Length: 277
Image (spheres, helix red, strand yellow):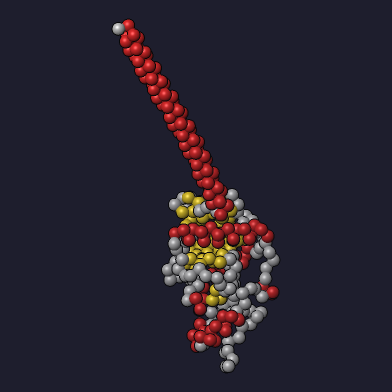
């Protein structure tokens, strides 16, 4: 079997330039994809930032995934998935969103193989380097054509957003309106609320998993309470009907007893009249 003309550098993994990619056979392309790491090289890894960082990005993916599933829109969402643009160093935003693609399990997002790059990237800062997210990524993501980029500074409870205008490769800041940052990619508004990044549609916050569970539990409690009330109503109705039937039976019995006694009295009267005659 012929050797693959492209080799991945493990210390600086990159996808091949687009011109070379298009020259590879399907088998060679598959080999390249499989050889691209699904994690950062040791030299590029960053120290973990604890639960606040993990919770912010995982909550974002969870809320957005639930929303797009409910409205029936195909959107691929991932957290810290390695992204490979042709000839570019690999990077892995805290959250990416890609519109109108299959939401299947992936180990990496290779732009040449997928046919498009992310439509939105979001980074969460807790205690990490702010310059990377607020300066270098702003230039790089715009150059790569990522339509929108948001940064949630969890440590300072700030939100920043940028958007590409048609035909440009430099971001314009997204200005908040009444405290909300509009995402044209997601069709949603973003806002920092109570130390969390929240998403809104039509002024209503998208529910998080625990909130949905609490709502369902409350609904179940209401259904069970209604069911109990209905049982009580049915039980009381059955008791009243039974009481009505008992009273009706007693009235019928009294009437029958009265008619029987009247008949006996009339018969006795006739007997006495007969004896006198």
